[in-house]
Length: 206
Image (cartoon, rainbow, N blue to C red; front, side):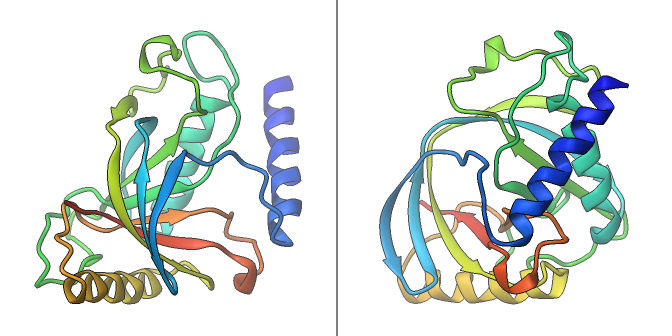
């Protein structure tokens, strides 16, 4: 009961800050390599993520995946240990393949989505508590170079698709080779005022 109340309190606190554009969550470390308008090339350090796959459409998967992963960091783990919330929350179609000729966020008949939380800095894969939920797993993500487009507004599937296509066009025009499918990076909860939201699309590059 105490953990539930604490989770609600933390969520409300973060909601109040995020609604007015004040972000206090830790972000994974990266070095800015290049910037042009809303486009950036970043180099991310190695990070550890907690991830899950959700069998639901885009709208429902956001809530289901977030609750599942939040449960892990708020104590649903082998050590009943609580960890700090970080940003962003990543999401992408679980069955998507790298096909630049097709819509990058097209819906699939099985409606499966992949979501990941980044673990706080300084936490290695070996010393993190194991998830008690079998649908949550931990994984180390090697350092990599990532192309990013930043945008605000509602994080709808249509908006994510539009921004992904813009980033892919920019990469092609600047002779960068994509090395992954696009993924959504959300820095704010859904109730944040749309014009204050920080949204991004990330694509790994060679």
